[in-house]
Image (cartoon, rainbow, N blue to C red; front, side, top):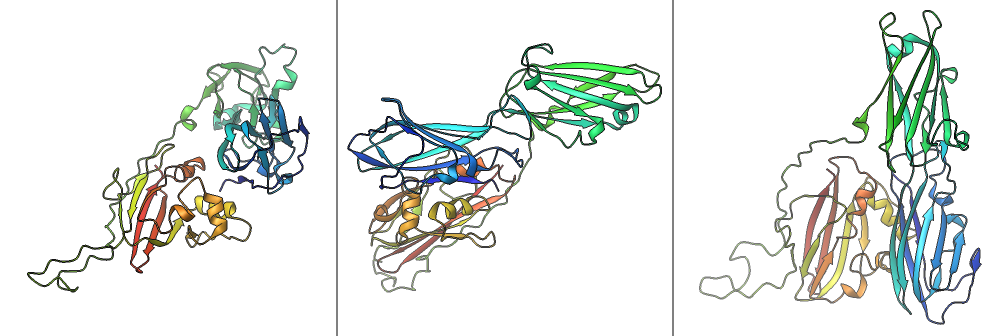
Amino acid sequence: MKKILYIIAAAAVVAACGTKNATQPEGMGQLSLTAVQEGAYATKANDVLADFTVDIVRPSDGWTKHYDRYIDIPQTISLGSGDYTLTVASPQQRHAAWDLPYYSGSADFTIRVDELTPVNVTATLQNMKVSFVLTESFKNELSSYSIVVTNAASWDAADAAEKSLTWSSATGDVEQKAGYFSVAPLRVKVDGYRAVDNSESHSELIISDVAAKDHHVITLDARVTGVVNGVSITIDPSVNDRTSDVTVPGWDEVPVDGGDEPGDEPGDEPGDDPQPSTAPVMSWDKNPTFAPTPIAEKMDVEIVIEAPEGIRDFVVDVDSNVLGETIAGLAGASYTYSPDTPFTMDLINDEAMIAALNGMIPVGDQLKDQVKVNFSLSQLVPLIAVYSPESGSQHTFTLKVTDKKNQSLEKAVVFYAE
């Protein structure tokens, strides 16, 4: 699972690292930030979120606060009221480097006096990945070779050296090494010596269609000896667009309390007018049958809960191999997550959980004693997509509501990755 960067800020004033123009307005507010890393190119360098830099800037007066490493940020931060921009970024950025993905992301937000402002930031991959696949023909035809890739304007450009990487047969790891390049057209040059007569073979390719987050997998192939003297280079585009057909089976509707047959309760005798039920009920206008729903970047998950007797307890069990650990991390070090059991969120009685999720879903007094609640998962569920969940994986939120008469309702809301 992808690592997650959390910055939980509360009302205390703390000493800042690298602050200028430190005078702030008298009115203070609170920042609650969740920053997540998006991308599938995990390496051993530059993607450890604890080492990401964090910058908070107030454009109106140039006030800034900088942290060299996330791990050094104090647990609580207080900011003066005003408009801000927050940026998280990998600690190193180069035009060309081995195993060095560069992530960054930013968000604008406003701090208001005595208010908690939740901010979500996603750090996305800003450079490109390049790797090679060698066919058996290439390996058999060439006894030795070198591959140079650059994103400089030309091979002779003044900055070509710092923008180039070289793969070589001498190291024996061409297919295992990945290079990362800033976004610019790529030039690929292959120089090799044929096994049969040691004659030279050369080929070049320019890749002009480039963008951040691209993974260019370059397949190298060689013509058969005695037919054509040269090396053929082709691009395999299949890594950029992978699609899978996933069939999600139907789900039986879970019976709810209060659905007994007539005659089981007083007032159900023939000729009697039964009393209206006061048990909690749930409805979802966009999905009346609560059918399993695909996960998307933007979703409308607005579940209406009606409890005429008033809500006493509200618990949500999160059965998700990516989101359960995320929420546990938000709630604090005392919480643990096990992939074998759902992670339980007590949204009325657990103060740490309330503080962690406030602003993202209804919590605390927004639920307690209420007779009708619009329980929105529209912000929480799309976070699953950030971590590239396995196609077909299911992520279940089981909502458990109990009212003041001890009447309970439990409903499973299922989402799946396409």
